[in-house]
Length: 105
Image (cartoon, rainbow, N blue to C red; front, side, top):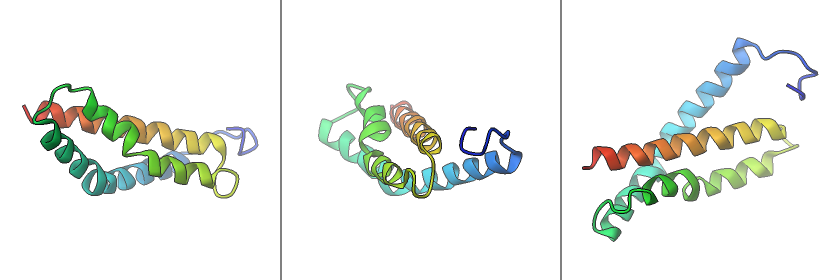
């Protein structure tokens, strides 16, 4: 809101954010989240404690993405946009980790 001179966001702005988040999260799920979850499940010998799985995908697996987004602040995107993407990937990753534990019962 502040970066675009106070103008309201348009449908195109919101759709662009949504498409980027869906495509990037789909790639992250296949390449990073799923192998990490299976590794943790094998290493722990099961799904207990369940809280570790959403933490792994929500926080730890997203650290490289967070670093990339922080490095893009003030060069390619504004702070609020980077924080929005970070929150989106945090929620997506945590939900994927929780879904993995519920599905693997």
